[in-house]
Length: 596
Image (cartoon, rainbow, N blue to C red):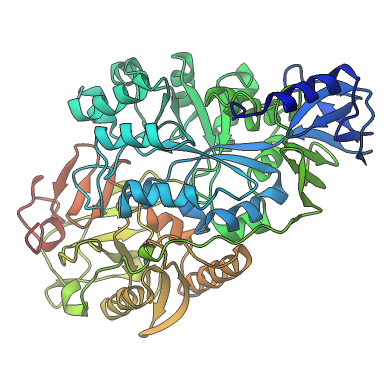
């Protein structure tokens, strides 16, 4: 981060620190929170170039009075997927800089599942002129597993190439194939070894893993997890040296459950992350600062909360110049009136003012390459393509729950009509489908889902972790088909449909994942979409975020992919008929309908 710094800049910074030269900028009148001791220090902050030169009493060519404010290091999102915000690199920075976030560690496995390594390079290449630090964790599981169909793959050689060629690369992203790690699968281990040979670290993804299997996972050298949902799980992992990434996103909100870990044992080996957050929430509630606000409201000491959003993500990820306001650190500084609301008045990035009073300074718009468009390849779908013959007995249903990514596999009497399985909104049973959209195979996985609460209509999206095929949930086959058709017209996005009419939509023409519009416009579209879903009866706070995880084949207990209904405990495809064993033979919902 500072390797290319000219010697004259370093000499100037040292001279400023000594007091022999005036600082370029002095922040005076505020109190600095020391993330090393938890104290509030009544000192000036002297800035030379992009770095803090010293704390104490200084003169400067420019002086900014920050009286009445506490100065904090810039916030760091320790693990997130940029694509989940639906925003390009410039729009995201414009949305979160006013919140005090000045850096993010991203895992772009969403765009990698669509376009592979060139998608990763294009995304980060567009960020070159943005006043924000994006750090890359190279995607480890593209696709996430053998039961979903992606647009691209990344093997160990691809991982090595990205680690070597991408300047922003700092490690290997969440290793979701934890069965592969525990079972010492050679292909998985080669990616971990490639990361170790590069002198970098590997993030984890191990929901519910415990006992000997957890020991095996950690023995491979994986050092973090953001999938803990229970206190006991997080405690076991922390006892074994794991860094616990406490996640508070739009769909998965684990802060309240895991915060006792910090209150009981302090913040060591804990950091904060959003993982997946909707754009309207960014603009309305905030980003990392919203997690800080909630943590303090739940009883976390403010200094501990701040450490988990600054020093700890920097230390875990090896970002040696970030995470503190101290000599030699980058001058990423956030001025807040108090340590309860965390609403920044001023935000500095590398010594330059980038946001004030909730508004980002002008950021140059960036453009994505044209080849990122037109990535949705789905043939015309009719209601007949979504029919499922009734099995004549109980059926398996995927149950989703608010605020959780983990699902349950239920067995219920069949919602049947005229020899076909049909949605039954009165029982909160809906039909679901996942359509392969990268290669035009026509493959469709069909199933049933509960927990969405829709009374009518359909919701559909090309944001469907991790392979990002088309996912649709609905109370009516005709509306489901209409929603799929609209996504194909848009080139990707999210839609709500009722009576064959589009009620609201969010166009995502870039890889079917990202918008080319500013954050405010995307947020407004998302609000209209969420309102439309609520009008159709949805009871989930973030129905599209929840739906986007319906196809992710590495989270318990049940998922639906383009290849069928998947039991993610036994990692086997199962039929919808509850009395039939695992395997691809059986109902349409558990078999490929076209050649691979």
